[in-house]
Amino acid sequence: MSSISVSTTVNGDPVDFVCTPDESLLDALRNRMGLTGAKEGCGTGDCGACSVLLNGRLVCSCLVLAAEAEGAEIATVEGMAGPEGLHPLQRAFIDHAALQCGVCTPGILVAAKALLEKNPDPSDEEVRYWLAGNLCRCTGYDKIVRAVQAAAAEMRSA
Image (cartoon, rainbow, N blue to C red; front, side):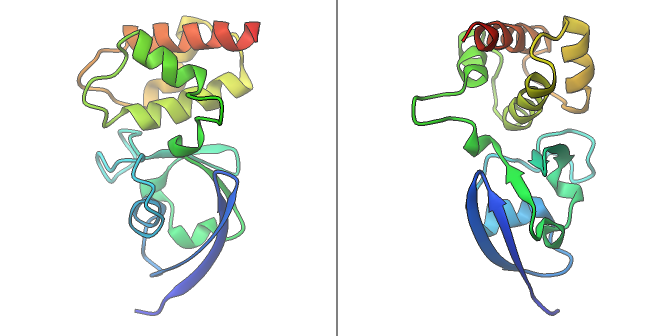
């Protein structure tokens, strides 16, 4: 199978990689770039564990071909923390025990960040609706919603 060269931006950094035409963005992130935050939970776009932002749009990276990232901007969970430390969402997930096994957490964090960028003051119902594509089998969703709300409040007051 022939190879494709892809130039993209990941978490603000230019990245060039070579992939096969049928390689998923998830596999390229994990195996070619060493960004293992996004997880393959289902491989069919049903669980959200592989969620990333592609040109500002929340996508399941298991359903996107790596070649489609040509010229795109990708944001992953690895890009959330800044030089000052963890992102408020990451801190809130720790503080509110909104994670356990960690498989779903990166996708939920990316999705929650996308929500708060669009709506800095969501209702609990809006948080639940926005995160409906992210499945968690360990924690239950109440702690996740509380963590998102706590981070939203902190971000609004900053």
